[in-house]
Image 1 (cartoon, each protein chain N blue to C red):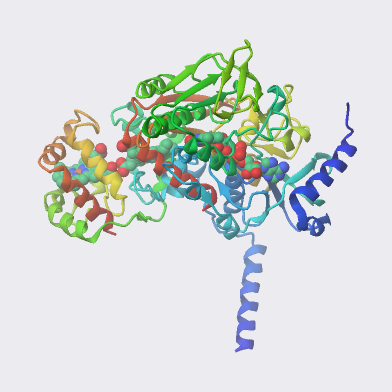
Image 2 (cartoon, chains in turn yellow, red):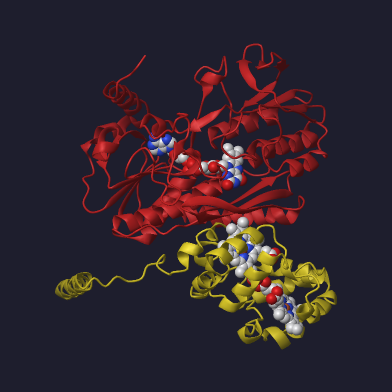
Length: 202
Length: 417
Ligand SMILES: Cc1cc2nc3c(=O)[nH]c(=O)nc-3n(C[C@H](O)[C@H](O)[C@H](O)COP(=O)(O)OP(=O)(O)OC[C@H]3O[C@@H](n4cnc5c(N)ncnc54)[C@H](O)[C@@H]3O)c2cc1C
């Protein structure tokens, strides 16, 4: 037993020194070329986009084209957010593709905020009307820039639904007419259930 | 009286060694932690220093990172105004340094006593630590000399560093009889957290309105107007007729016996409870180590690496810095921590630093459930930090307050998680 362990650890040491000698460095968490352009984002979205709060969306593992579109919409003022407008402009100046690529390349990190199981069950039923675009589990469709709702914080999802309903997210956008018309038919209380359901999906 | 550097070192080492370190001093003698490979010492485990320490380890785990911080736990100034109004508790703003330890940061709970730039050493207790690069993030210290009667600050309740002072002020506010007068004094710029005094005004006014309707709050502001988010604070204060806000009223004297403060024009204002926020300068360790600029108040730095313009291999970040178009905020200190960690990692590897711009968001609570915010994004142009845009929330709202909570959770974790 002892000898096995010793042999094993010697092998590990030997391997490590080969790696070191060869100068092969494993890429660290800050080595992605997009990191230096995204360092201000973690103050709200968490390190590498793994948001921990109920209000700030998770960016880790999000589709790059969707991130890019969102940043362009914030920067132009089409999608209104006092927090995001300046930071979207910063990302556009630094290189939006690198920023989007950085977050898209991160492992998806579902929110740590837990949802009430009863609300999840109610939300599953209510989500039938959304499945046509978002898919049954909320996976979305990158080819149509329909975002992945799975694992987003419930507070964030609910808030976005309220904004759609009141036509305050990208007001007047013809492409979003269908979703907004649909949201108007959903009672406010149901938003929390829908949010709980999508948030709990992985 | 001029104190020579050697005399100063001797006396301050002795004073701090006995007073603050107590039993530990004995262990910290000579080169008590000999340096092996590359080492960065970080002075101060607040918003700037804690972030820098963590990100150095994320960037290059071969760097030994030693963090000097006298406090056993981190306590957040952001959200501490809510402790005064009883909306939050201090424990909910208190975070352990174990997260940094898990990243391999060596956390020493002792103050840096002096810096010796020429030989790249920091004095700690009776001994010293050698460094390849030093990051200094000591926050602010108070200029009590500018307030007659304040002495060394023994009786001043500023609550401008979160901790015991916050609890003391909360207790004084909450135990004051209905009808008593609360006086809050605001120092001239530059001070830590430009919107901070006005957020505090809002919290105290909300508390008094709710709990002590006969009391009033007099704000004596040394500045000509509310320094930050002026319109939004003015709008919020419409709900608080108990605020008596007086601009251009610089307090220069305090009499704790008579319970009176005096302004530079000789106006005497009586108080029952006094929150005196004194004028500020960079943390003492930075100034006494020669890192201060011509004003001997704040520390000038390079805008890309945050290396001091006064000493090589020493970087200064956070509230202690000057010359950048950024507010003295925790969010900016966090940005600077990340940028400096990246620059130091590159410099130690013999590579050129990559220009990285900072960012800022300052949320302010104007009641128990609503907040406002100011947001600043920056770029680097010709190696200088330049603002791209400043944006305000259009109005106060519960949604902004919820975003403030989200920001706090994320950024605390970004620093210490
Ligand atoms: C009431 C209030 C509300 C605020 N609200 C906000 C807000 O909502 N948002 C925001 O972004 N900012 C806010 N701020 C500002 C924010 O707290 C500061 O800008 C931030 O703390 C600056 O970080 P720093 O690293 O420079 O200093 P600090 O965070 O103060 O850290 C300095 C550290 O250095 C240590 N230190 C000092 N001297 C030595 C020494 N010789 N050796 C070793 N360690 C030493 C200290 O113990 C301290 O822990 C607020 C401030 C106040 C007072």
